[in-house]
Image 1 (tube, rainbow, N blue to C red):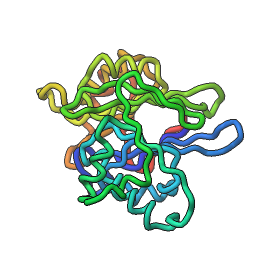
Image 2 (image 1 turned 180 degrees about the horizontal axis):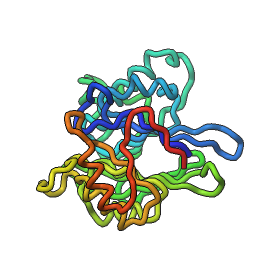
Image 3 (image 1 turned 90 degrees about the vertical axis):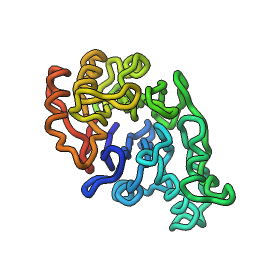
Length: 260
């Protein structure tokens, strides 16, 4: 299983990074490569095309309905309906996310009909739901954010044999549901939207210290910090996260590949 960072900027796309978007890929027993996109935030559809054909991915998971996590679903709809694959008989792309994500596509598109939903087969998910996509099992937990949001655990084939696990927090404050989801995972992709700010409102984001303590308490293998705003120097956030985790951490940057 491989995690490719497509975009990691928090709140909005930056000059050097789109907003939230991650590609998870891996092979099944027959050698067929499966691809799952985690979030498709503003500005992500362009760079995603460097790594795959977005119109033919096997599933899209959206953590919640804020534009920096879902806006480019509308762009994927346009690509699927009018791009190079428009004349191919492709099955709808499985789309998983909190209830209402399908309506967000229509809102972003400014649609007067529901044709923008034609490329997708939407299944709403909430805490404790699980789905299977090829060799991957996706398990969800309720996140703590101002709008309905989920974190996701992706379990799939390890590069060294056996099963590897990745947990993506989406946007969330520290909460027991996400902690339980992250227990003993190989890689925790954790947001630190409050960066290295030490006084934050509850129920929105984590800061570097909270991301690090979450990783420590969940006994994860590696911590990758993401969702730091493009106008913030991430060095302070990474320092706080590493101190709290008790081990080195890495920053999610576009193009980085993590092999599990």
